[in-house]
Image 1: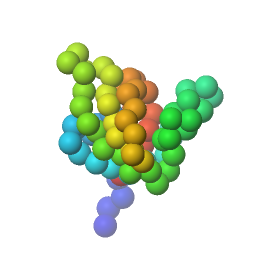
Image 2: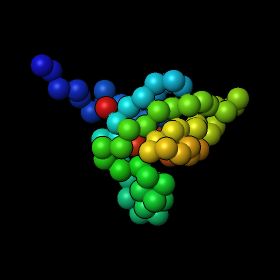
Image 3: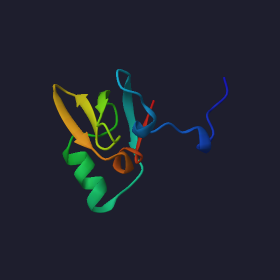
Length: 81
């Protein structure tokens, strides 16, 4: 089995509406990293992308029984599998 390269790393920003994934890691620290963790993005959490806004931002995700909307620029820091 071939391991994915860094350029093949998948983020929450790459997931299409209706698809699910699991959070693998957060690729940012500081205030934004803390905000994402406060919203519930931490390793092992199942996430489903519900929809994108008409102009693509924000993206609405469903996880652990609630919905959260974040910007695509923020979703790019959430590594998923």
